[in-house]
Image: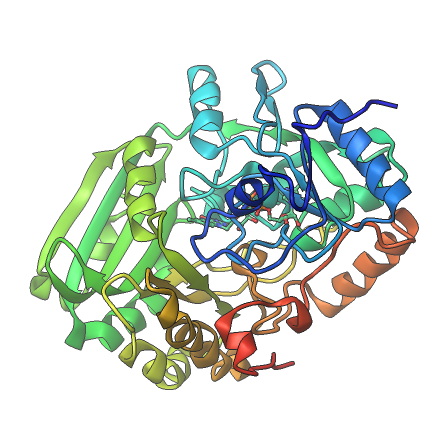
Length: 455
Ligand SMILES: Cc1cc2nc3c(=O)[nH]c(=O)nc-3n(C[C@H](O)[C@H](O)[C@H](O)COP(=O)(O)OP(=O)(O)OC[C@H]3O[C@@H](n4cnc5c(N)ncnc54)[C@H](O)[C@@H]3O)c2cc1C
């Protein structure tokens, strides 16, 4: 059996332990949870050794790839934290139009490797998100309205199972395992060491329209956008941000539409027909852009170095009902970093070979960002508490923004949840892998103040 060296195996109390624990979470709001052991894997052999060690020492296993879980899902109390952040290899097979990608690889690197071959992948919007958690959790990436959530482009995985074996799993060899890997997010029961992804055609060009409107038009803009979805090509991604605009130095509602164009059709034209278009304070119209610029823009929405609390609901309810119920959320945005994201998705068809299932027309997501730890509770109350008031409208949450411990919501349909647990019982009968977080595990100020999840 491969031995893990002292540098790669850190026990609580070791000098390098605390830095490794904190580094495992991108969010500045680090959880007060302490694994007994942290393994920094260099390669697949280390992953196998770590899983076998966890089994032999009776340690349950949490996983970190890119570290972008907002709640630091991989960092749990006790047990082992398996840190895969060094596994970043990417191999492209242009003929097969596939990429074999290790879990801590990032979107920009993957796109850079695909681009020379005219290929593309719906990577996450922020440049630093790891492929691992992103793909497993569904993966709502660039051009995902047309290309589907990233998990539906998974063709196979290399995965270390609870028994310590490394297998190459495909729909033919392990259909249940692949079904679970496509969308179970932080509930997956294995360590994926490589994703074999189907690549897509690279769009011929990318255009972007941005309109910023005064805040008094908020309801008009969101209502208009809700109806606009019917007229928008799926190759157009649309979101509205309600919050402070650093360019305009005031609160605005800013709509952004990004078109991933295959033809010369003017996919963004419908935005110019907005009935209040002449009231835009700032407008960028169908400007040619590139992925580097898009990543930069996304990175500035939720910059690193802050404490973040995110939450979200999918909803298909009539727009008047959503806006009415969401008024307290919109009206109490706590500062100039925090904002509410209104994403028009529109519903991609579910797939029989994926457990991914929860989505709707609109994704409504409060993003709270701050720096002072004494303000944790106020911001978490806004993100989770205000959203809990909209629970009756929710069709579920995105595992991307999951915070099940602080506000429970369904990330999968009831039928898929039940099937997932049956498959878990086959692959991980002793519960080696940590699954979805529970309220008892939450270390947020919100949990400490006694808030419990709604179900
Ligand atoms: C700034 C920012 C922007 C984001 N933008 C988007 C976006 O545009 N679209 C979107 O869909 N999501 C987005 N997310 C959410 C992100 O996709 C999820 O948080 C995702 O889990 C991050 O993946 P990770 O590997 O970086 O995270 P990690 O914290 O490393 O992983 C989260 C969990 O996923 C599971 N996991 C990860 N890797 C593996 C593996 N190799 N094997 C088994 N289980 C694994 C584990 O349960 C792990 O604890 C964003 C997050 C941030 C912080």
